[in-house]
Structures are given as structure tokens and as C-alpha cells.
Image (cartoon, rainbow, N blue to C red):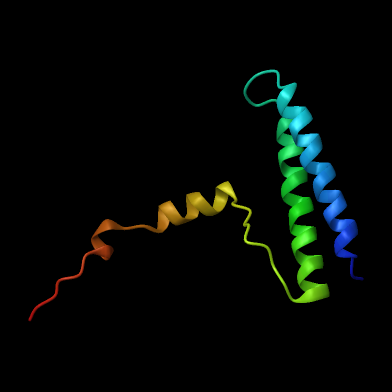
Length: 88
């Protein structure tokens, strides 16, 4: 079942507006309403991106970053493996 990109875009803008409201009413670090709004934006964006691609084979210039991806990349880095000795 495909979603109309206009409907997905409307959901995304609503999620962004709700995130702004949650952020402006924030009650300290780790406010659960801000965190929930954050994830709602990420989810709505992915739905919009998928709908846009499915309908028009097009994507946005935006990307959702996941904290787990950052941690995995940092764990995979081994400074010794990045060194290469070049002999001429």
C-alpha cells in the first residue's frame, strides 16, 4: 500500500510543529515529550521519504542519523588499520 506523498508531507510538518511545541515547553534534559516528538519527526520523515521515492523516484537531501549508527562506526575504527605504509 503506497501513501500519497502529500499526506506524508502533511504528517511530517505536523510532527515538526509538535516537536517545536514540545521543545519550547521542555522541562529539563531528557524530557520524555521532547524525546517522543523527536522520534515522531524521524518516523514521519522516513514515511515521507519512502512515499516520495515510491511515487516519483525522488529523495530529499536530508538524512536521519541514528545514535546507534554513530556508536557502531566509532567502535569499528581501529587507528592501526587506517595506517598504510607506502614503499616506493
